[in-house]
Length: 117
Image 1 (tube, rainbow, N blue to C red):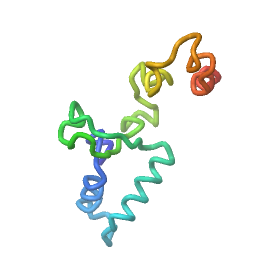
Image 2 (cartoon, one colour):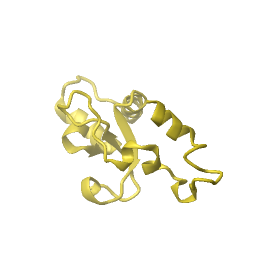
Image 3 (cartoon, rainbow, N blue to C red):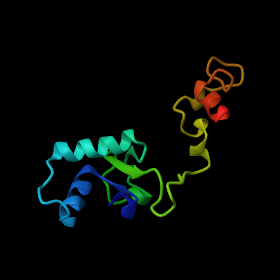
Image 4 (cartoon, rainbow, N blue to C red):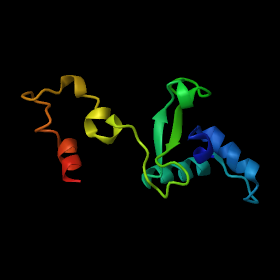
């Protein structure tokens, strides 16, 4: 379901599972949450909040939803934007980051890990 729509809510995922009729019993909300949480921990799915725009247009702004880390059919290759592929692109402290400040590329552990990768 997430692969087809690129993004989905917990309710949407549960509904899609129910509609497939693959399973003879219906999952509880808690079981669905556990499955999705496992997918997040396995780095197969990312938990995000809807912006209400683009692929999130059908989902209420601020609602927690889930997005695949890789596009279906790409053999697990991650598809991300250029800025999202470096730590600075998603850093909540980017506005406070300066070359000689307390928060800087030279003191950033995430940037160092990214460079080592």
